[in-house]
Length: 195
Ligand SMILES: [Mn+2]
Image 1: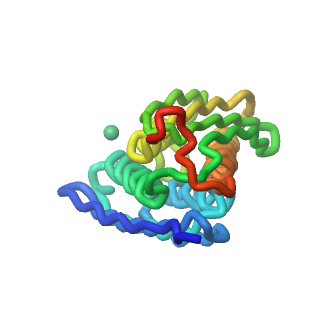
Image 2 (image 1 turned 45 degrees about the vertical axis):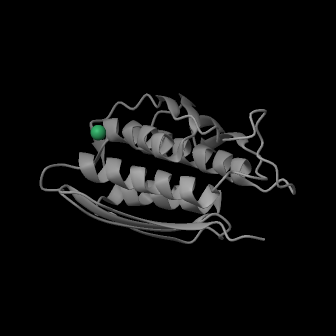
């Protein structure tokens, strides 16, 4: 069985990100991106997708959280794309609902090779734990773009924005776990033969 691992080093004038990913891990997460709630969301993603993830970022937090949030998501997405290689022998699709107390989120995704994201989180607060709420959706969109996947996420209900955001990441993680699962074959799961 070929290892499905990758490493991305992404450095700009705004951020320096290192991301290591193992799709066949156990959910070990070493996340240190400098933003408390963003650490929490990436840890949630790794744990419930059962990916081993190291994600470290030194970003321009003196500006704000935007570049750090976006660039970490781009690095993780690129790491997923690289670890999947030709995308042979995978389930390709995944969809899950995830409850978090009163909140309920739904994620449906396709490792299609075509970047697309429709994200409706319905967050009302300005920020959570140092992360602007507008950047929660931006992280998911950036991740989908770099990973070349199609992602639909809707938070269907929930009073508490922390719960809504965390439920969304749990749903995405569980759907990812399904989609990257090996199906026992070696085919590219596409009528075109390429993803
Ligand atoms: Mn941006």
